[in-house]
Image 1 (cartoon, rainbow, N blue to C red):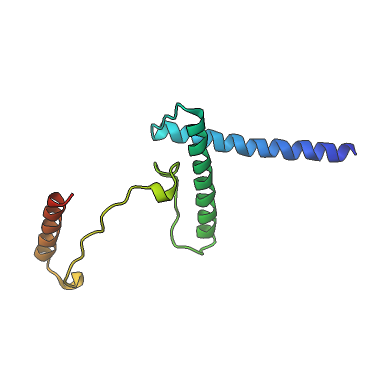
Image 2 (image 1 turned 135 degrees about the horizontal axis):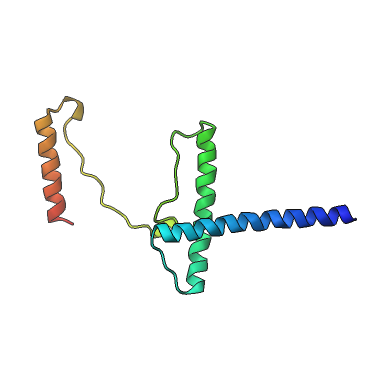
Length: 122
């Protein structure tokens, strides 16, 4: 009976240690990316999203280590915001000609035109 009690205690301590590790990572994340949530409810919400991001990063990088995917990922400044709320960026301009056969002058001209278009249509 006492053995089961100690197993339960050790398992509980292990769970708390994991939570503290997530919390420490959360505090480091907020310092690194200058996040400041003064409302405890808002902080808890963003912490929950952040913990989900930690889980996604770990799962993905485990697949990377098993050579199931070709790239690793990491926590970024948006990791405490749901992905459907991430800012969207306009698509990159496409080049009409085959870039492998284009001269450097043609490529530079395409880049210049794309930058001009971006300035005109922010």
